Amino acid sequence: MLTVYLLDAVTPLGEPVWLLYFIPLVLSFWSGRYFAIPTVFAVTVLFLIAGFYLSPQGIPVNIAILNRFTFFLLFFVAALLLWWARGRQIRKENL
Image (cartoon, rainbow, N blue to C red; front, side, top):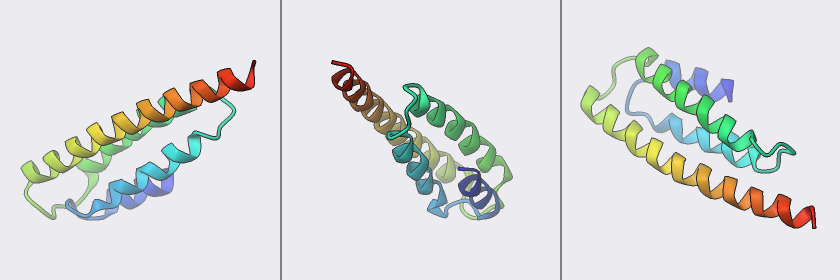
């Protein structure tokens, strides 16, 4: 995940590098820890904000904010769905 953040921080705004943050989120689904998905989500949101401030100018800032906010919403929904599915899987394994 740190690699994605570093890549996000050095690429200009407007490059959809932040889509790579989905990789650690999906991989956290197979973690043995129930709270891995929300943890990855929280850390990614922090990296997303920091990457916005550290990235060089590429597109107008208002469009970059809209892009990142849209990603945040999609990422939030994906994290909720994965966490729900993981919870069901854990409960099924414990039966």
